[in-house]
Image (cartoon, rainbow, N blue to C red; front, side, top):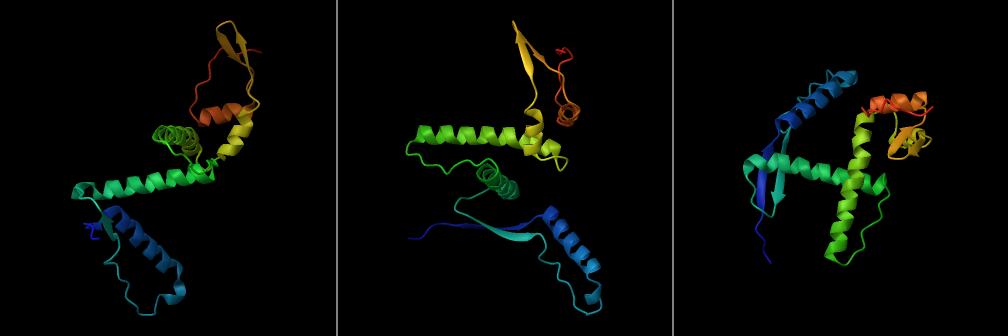
Length: 167
């Protein structure tokens, strides 16, 4: 059975720049091959072919490609870092509910992870915040004294802590 397919020849200028920079840095670092007389072919840098079963507006091909990459990376994080079990559902409402929870957990996980960068792991940050205590009095919740590590972590995450705290 034949299916219609569309091929998109893409030249991504940003990818081209990254690939050329990588080749140049490898050439600088590899001093033993500098004088071997070989020419470096840069003509294919940043070029790739995308195949699709649907017709796509040429202006949207690169953004859609990178959105797909981001989605794959996010599901990789959900599977590996968050230990979300494989989906075993037989109804559409269950599937939609699972996907909603997956996206919410990815947002909750990735937002602070991106803010923290390489400063501290998200697991270590959660461990530091585990000892944070609060007291509830009527309709008011008062945070107990923050440790230095908690204060620094909250500042790094740009989380505003209320000025009113318990002793």
